[in-house]
Image 1 (cartoon, rainbow, N blue to C red):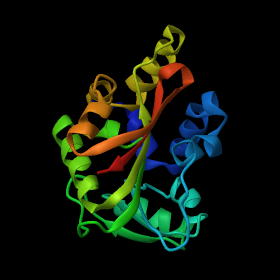
Image 2: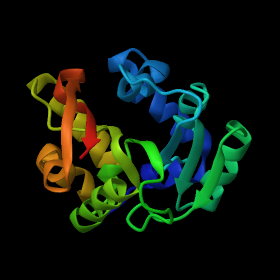
Image 3: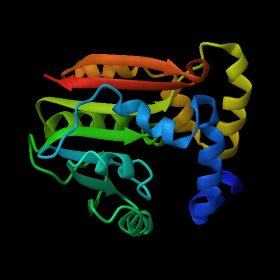
Image 4: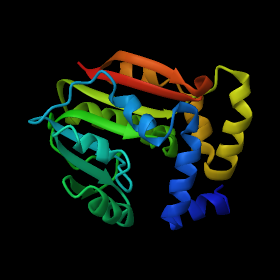
Amino acid sequence: MSTIFRTWSYQYPWVYALVSRLATLNVGGEERFHQLPLENLAISPGQKVLDLCCGGGQATTYLAQTGATVVGLDASPKALARAKINVPQATYVQGLAEDLPFGDREFDLVHTSVALHEMTPAQLQSIIGGVHRVLKPGGIFTLVDLHRPSNWLFWPPLAIFMALFETETAWQLINTDLEALLDQAGFSINHQRLYAGGSLQVIQARAN
């Protein structure tokens, strides 16, 4: 069940921006947060990158700065309209993450930022399988999303945030072993790291 705070965050971009800034303080701010899944990745001009569930282009900005050809995908036409204004150098496609409208082996890298926790378990499996399909062999899937805290001090703020802004799918994700799902889909984990007392996870996985 969604709350009025979640509804406002979708209706009013300034609410979403404020919540995002506050939520990323534990990792050094919004810019640092968006850099986390890109650390140690050599992204260069000539490569093709998919920003999965790109929203208004918050993370697309950093992908476009690499000089790669960036495609943003989102189900929301309103979000894509904002992304086109914020990051005009990328191209955008409206579509579902669980039914990617792209050809096989099309991308060198697929990136997603705090979107997987919005998906049901069935959608999550479809997304991971689809990402593997559209990645070139050896391509990278990099993500940042919620995780079950390893430090108990981070449980109260995460629980409050999730109660106000998230639904049951967020709770399902923090109880999901993403590494195991990626392995089953044909990925090898290159890098996995926890931040903010374990309440955030970054995973970089290579398509076999």
